[in-house]
Length: 317
Length: 302
Figure 1 (cartoon, rainbow over the protein chains, first blue to last red):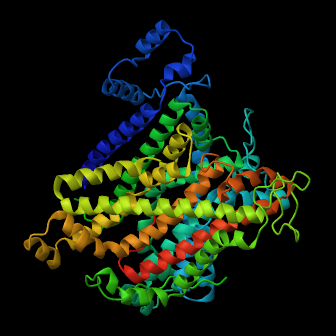
Figure 2: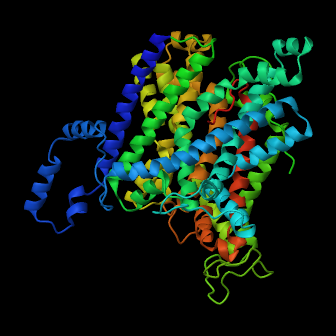
Figure 3: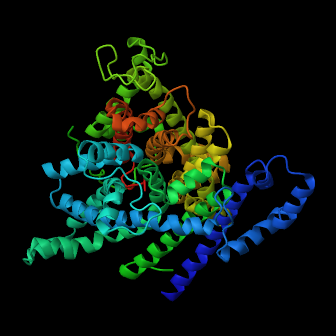
């Protein structure tokens, strides 16, 4: 077991180095040096040379990469070109906001997906199973941003149940829980609907396959209640793969979240990245690409390890 | 609309290696699946709507009429008019052309790249395979959307650039699936026989392996088209996709989203429903293909 954990950890390191290298290269493919972005197009040659020497921009690319990586490892992600703050400061504000939406969304979506998939497998090919499958197909086929718009249209404009997004406390002292949750309710509901559409379908398939196994028939035959059969014998075997989905889904979750933040005007990582891209504020883009990349690698690693821990049948090599 | 359940995969092991022109058993199974019929008719309808529709519905999609902006649907403008008084239905048809063309092109290129990569990696084996798959792992960890946005903000986006970038970022899944297929196929007798008869690597790849991975490839191609259409729409919604003035569904939604609180529902629902209909069609066809061609493949689209 320890050997497996170590080998998975060692595998993650080259992946992470690759992620940093590619992000670094992409930023350096950008035409135009940061000098002119920072100093303006009319900067004198002398000033440019001073600036390049100051920031090490005259060094060969591999050396620049190593120096940059050293800075990143110390938590120094650079300074935003346009907002007079360090990238680390900007991210430390934006990341928790995004994690609130994604975190709550993933937990709620897991519960609903498991319940829905189990119910569908139990009622397989009955009318309510078909209805839920249609529901999944419909939401699975929906663009994130359009679902967001429709949610605003229905729950904010027609019904006035929730505010159309935004921050509950822009720059002001903390607000009460109800105000906070009402502002992020629509973004979270949007995310949950989209996740459940995918994962619910998966759970239904996994559970349907489990429920025809012999040990399920045995459990039923010895007179266990349907509840125990479903949740104790059935669920344990089909819920495991769902764990790994979270790891794989991290880039997708952040991508969906970018659209959600744009539609609901919620200033988290998505909006931070989007605005940085529009303004050509490359240090921010580089940092967000890096953070989502790191979260993905970590997510996959944790999912693999968790899977090996909970499923005794997994052979770890 | 009632939707039939995902059919159970056909019983039995992997199908015997057959050339693509003899796949009639699989195709028969595909066409007997209600999902396939539903998907093909939905997609067919949207293609007709976008490409043949303008020949029947003659209202111009580009003539503005500032005296008739935000008109709710009437007999003259079946889906109303937008902020510049342009006919929404005509724009929906014209926008469909670009959205579908770019989506299909990007989906096609994605799968070509992924298939080639997977074939090479799987057949090569050894250290080359290990390196190629490590590269896939690394690229999988990168947030593709962020990179798409970045590239689009640096170069002025065009349909061609979008096709190129979407496929360059999208081929990873196909490559993994094709490689996995090749790994099992290359140990089979017919490949060994071809090799002992002196076939080179390219001949084995294109003559013997490619026909046998076509099932997997078609399934991923269908989903790749769906993903590409969603991506183009999403990028256009963010203002970094297909440039105006030619309309496209994502861009139309982006325009319409500014007028939600004026209750301009005809600018919000139709373009969105058009995208949903394409995606539904593609997902139905993909699932039906998967059931027909690849009993082992499940939920290939994470």
